[in-house]
Length: 565
Image (cartoon, rainbow, N blue to C red):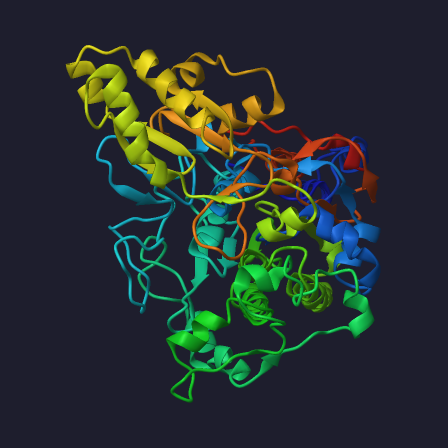
């Protein structure tokens, strides 16, 4: 199999053959045309994912960004205003799976961060694999250690296939699922260990870490933040439009605390420990560490300088914005400041890339796995109907109503947000019709405060969902073998969750689906703000086109041809 290389390199090879063989009939007349038709591939593709970043925050805070980070992407890259994670269950694992597979959950098989196995009723974590463990770190049975549950290939898998595994695909994240689901089956993932502050891989990928990882761990960079405080980066007036924490409707109402700045990083025992390393996840320092490890990977693996002259891929998922938005909401000063700090971190990283690999040789993709709704109390203060809904508290009443209607107890087995699982074995034993029970469950759900839609297994199996945006997104999110039997959608501004603080995502509404989608690389991408509708699923086929490899096996996205030179 021919190793992919640039057409300029092919031309040099043919020229060498002509000279060494003295072939009189050898000609190069067609080769300049080939070179013009096939521009050089990038030496390095960098896929940056900010966990939990809604597009509206990028636009809202644009004027405050520095020159080299997000502003560079906006000014020098192509970016879409109307880009979406185009499925209905907008959570981290599903969103990360979409980015480099180009597939929807009904194909790629990652239907949530967690779900209930319909056959065993056991809880499943998206990247768990009990056959593998973290290298040198404590591993629990449900920890994420491999892509065993991912059912399709990624862009990185296809690139490594095309290059005889000479291309390197390395990913790093503050969350295991953020790294593993970008790496695919044949890449290598590294994830943050919140008990030790290390980045580690698992035995799925290797038995021992390479020397560069061992050296990085030995330097203990995670300890340098001990005793520091996260304080606002900008002057007070820069945050004037953020929600005030001292208002009853503000973040303080949901967190039970007032202004959270300064946010300290320490532990009760006076030295770095698991409590301290866990605290690093909320704020700018985990992202700083993640980008530091990405630099170490670039140098340790010589990414972008592949001796086989083939492209490499680096995936970096920055997790902290998700933790901040969960705790305080995207309307908060904390979230605002965190994005400003992340912007500066990206500026430094881009400067490093330019010096190390050259941005002219690098294709950058920037996106997010999902957006975020506001904290319910904030939405209520703005006259919206908004609450948290813990639907599992309704299961007893649901089973009671079903028993009264059908004369059978416990027809509902489990709640696994956003789905209800039914006991089909019992339904069959009692000679009940599946559709009758499903419809009864759906009617009960629709009469529950906060529920806007209910889709049954019979509907979803037959593709008989309403021809609406929400119907389409929920159909894409439903996997025949893995998903539940009646799938629910909350009303706008409601979300499935318990407690009385913070906020969460997971819906098909635009505040959860509309995310950044940016491409930057002057040899391949035409800069500009594009109004066309786009999906995160379009990233994989676009990269496959630029890298001259086949699209991932489940890819349904389109090539973003309007952005290409």
